[in-house]
Length: 346
Image 1: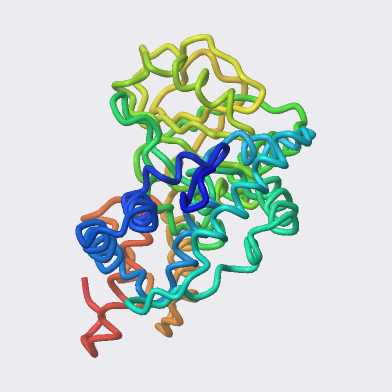
Image 2: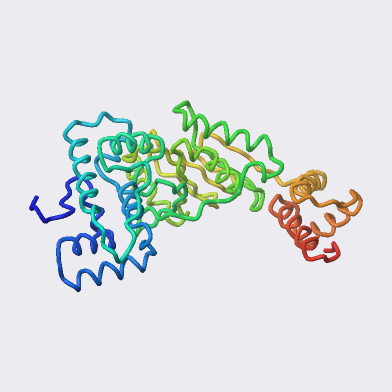
């Protein structure tokens, strides 16, 4: 490493592909006005001028590299790899050790504070519990044939918000719990009509286990042929994955592909071969629908006389059907009416 050369890295080389950090390296290794201007432009574009060290730390923590992958898998780290990683942290700290004047360097978070051996040990525990790379803080993805795993906005549903179908939810929960604990489990087919809460239940249950290194990956039914490729990709990642495939047709066939860390859940209107656990979501009757609406009304703190709620419910189901999704729409409609000071009517 040359005396005036900065960010000569071995393990964390990928962070230099970040436009801002790449521009920072060029700025630190050059006295040119153009390099400085480029760096400041990238800095201001990202709003990192008030705590640049924190920005760098975030990129370092989320970097997918030999050290982070080994930590996430719980593997023993060779002293050579650990020493190289620590040397990279120290090199980053050296590069950040100056007072530029044009922006605020700030302080990195505690996980990398000091950029030294202690930071490496803290990160080991972090990666072991949280996974590494793009999977840190991101729990839901879709698989795209061109882009690969693409982060998605996670589902906001909770199991407590999904009313009814308690036995069905319990079956899915127990199967997923077994999966994350490494106990016997089975691929799941959730069979029933649209609107009965099949995929919402899967997403909400997956959210429960996200802190136990479970990630949800959605695969479009038209890309079913990509399933072996996707399973092969996920098998190499030290996390557990639930693949969700929605609205499979009755003639669909799940390709034979297995990995210890991958479980498949699919929704369909009819039974399909190839799944070990069949969970049926049957339509609700009037009383079942009304029970769901009553529970949702409690959540929304809607105080309606029982007779009025029943009348509104009957009018609603004539137009919108009798599914849990319809019940949630009704409760949301009544809540909106109350918030706007309008009469409750359908």
